[in-house]
Structures are given as C-alpha cells and as structure tokens.
Length: 280
Ligand code: DHB
Ligand code: FE
Image (cartoon, rainbow, N blue to C red; front, side):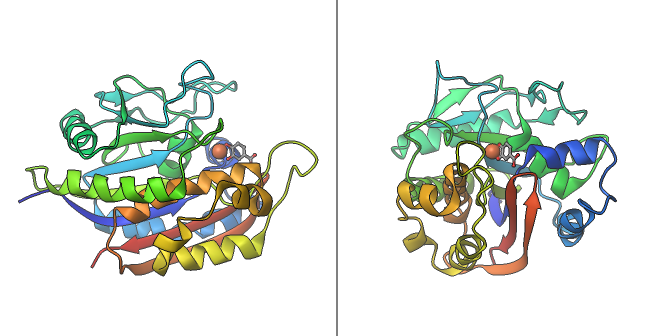
C-alpha cells in the first residue's frame, strides 16, 4: 500500500511550443508534425492516470535569479502559479502540489545526503508548464498533482549528470517509503541540443541527440558521466539541460520498457526529444 513509481516521461520544453498551443497554431504546417509526436503520449497518460508527477525542470531566471540559485529545489506548496515570463503568464491552470508527499520526499532525501532547498511558493515557467501541455493538452484543470523539482542548469556550475542520476535513486527510495497507495511518475525535461546565444546560436546536433536517446534507455549510468564540456561542445550551451533527464532515469528500474520515442527538428531554436519509459 505504498506509493510507487510506474513510469518516466522525458521531453524538451521549448517556450514557443507553449505559445503555439495558447494561440491555436497547433495545426499549422510548422507545428503539426511536432504535436503529432505526442498523440500517443496523450492517449497513454489518459490510461495511466498518475496521481502525482515529480516534475524535474529548470527555472529560467523566473522564480529564481542570479541572486539566489539553488542547485536542487523541491516545492512543497499547495499550488503553483504559471509565471509571467515577459509576455504575460500562460493561460493554463494553476498547478496543484502535494505538500504531504513533497515534505516526505524532502525529509527522506535530505537524510539520504542530498541537501535539497525547500521552497513553498514557486511560480512555474515554461520549463514546467510546456511539458504538462504537451502531455495533457488543454484541460480545465491539470488531472493530477505535480511536485516541482527545480534544477539549476542556467548558471555555472550546474550539477553533474552523475549526481542527478544518484538523486533519482534517492527520490525513488523516498517515494517508495510514503505510506499511501499513489501512482507516481517522474518526468525529466529540457534539452535536446540547442544554443540560444553567441556565434553558434541555432546549433543542433542530430547524431548527439539520437545517441543520447538510445543510451539513456539502457546505458544510463555510463552516459550520466558525460562531462559538462561535452554537452557544451556537442549539444550547444543550453544542451546541458539534459542532465535533468538523469534524475527521472535514476528513479526508474535499471531495465525499463520503452513505450514511445520521438525526435523532431526544429521547434524554435531547439531539437525536441521525447521518451516514455515504463517500470515493469
Ligand atoms: C528556447 C529553448 C529553451 O530551452 C528555452 O528555455 C528558451 C528558448 C528556444 O528554442 O527558443
Ligand atoms: Fe530551457
């Protein structure tokens, strides 16, 4: 009768995807193939009916700025407001948290030697709301609770992929010691290759991305040891968002069943990658 992690969802989080959804552009020629890659996913999640999602994402100087940069933060509040990122907040529902499970996870993971920052109120930007929109479409209310886990991948030094992978394992121990029958998913978001600035702005590396999608399924532990400089060189400066995927992967079994894989270029300046992995 304990909580259980049933599956992991991995997806990029490009803000222009949110704008396309919010402004009814999903059927346009540019966007249609991108959204088609999530048709299966919306059906799958309607059947899975998770109770809670641990949503690993990065804040883009929205809730945190360079004055305060937590490496890892967990949000324990009742609800989280879609943030105003400069064009106004996205017209999506409030995100409902799960204070009891989030507090339990903080207790368990910190005692397990991962010193998370604990946040109560947290405005959530496209890093969190775009993955929700891709998976759930445009409901009146999000169909489950969400615990935001924010990771710094914006200001150096971000955490290593190896540390993220180990944190995923600690999250699993935390969830599985929560005394309530809950279907929990862990999502890893951000990436794939993209660079938004400087002379290499617009960089995409399809072969890097596809190798990453291959290896995170069945060679994740070794892949997690990729140094940051390799992400920067091969996947662009913002490609380092991919370290967040290891938190979700670490929370799953060593051997997983791949239910879905999708890769698409481009969405705005970004390559979009998506995986659904199930614990059996
Ligand atoms: C884009 C991608 C991002 O990950 C982001 O945070 C902002 C912009 C882009 O492709 O435009
Ligand atoms: Fe981003």
